[in-house]
Image 1 (tube, rainbow, N blue to C red):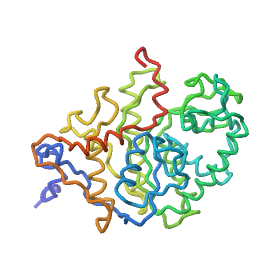
Image 2: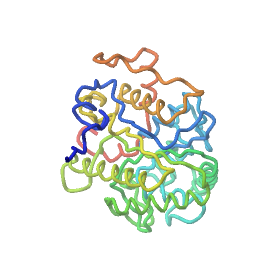
Image 3: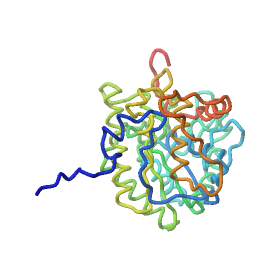
Image 4: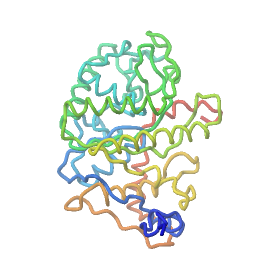
Length: 354
């Protein structure tokens, strides 16, 4: 007798039982993880704007968040090194290669309209800029030394994939933003727009992992996809269509990479924020930035599954089913601070209300 192959499967594998009856606050789409990390494990983080939420959560929870290059002020965004946002897989691969002298951008300095100098790969991290081009080069030399230390010391590296659209300098260097967004005329020539394919990103990710294993064989990687939509698209189509492609492509890259490597895990930040039962409530009024309740939910699930419970701050329990998510005053203040992140991509918003 033929047996229905889906009969007897766990409830979480069916939409009717795994999604439809589950309240937004109770949603936890993580079934299993290949590894967890302990409070003492050095954990580094990088990626798009949303990666800053994970970094700050780890630090606030008392875990060993690795900061090879600490911020210079309390208001500076939290990174494991002062590299700013790493939006694309190409940027990530070039960051690691550059730290060991294997990628050398042809243009290392941009001059702003106000006469100050900045690092093209960290355009907003130094608001005051630098007095001379030599100062930029010296700061980058020290920065790359810190990046080497970060990759060599971390036990876990968390990377949030953010964008497929990118601007590439004439030598192929991936830029966080095009120079024109800052009113800069680059001395090395104008960059060109490129929208990465799944195949290109998979190749970049495999190269990054190969290089990473060469310098740190024991390290593990957690991939997640930013739920924050594109602020703008350079493709000649609606931004919603471009956003759908971008998130779908990034999700495929994360999925295929995690399947191919036992030392790589995928964490569903994107799915938690965009789940149907949430009905968009985790986004701010601009329908783009993730609010405090959404960040809190993602961090709660991340804590429950990826962070071992033998020490560190305990994950807050979810509210009872059917009740609205109403954070305490303390939680509101915490996540309001978490929501203040540096986002280079916002420079691309040239609309009438920008």
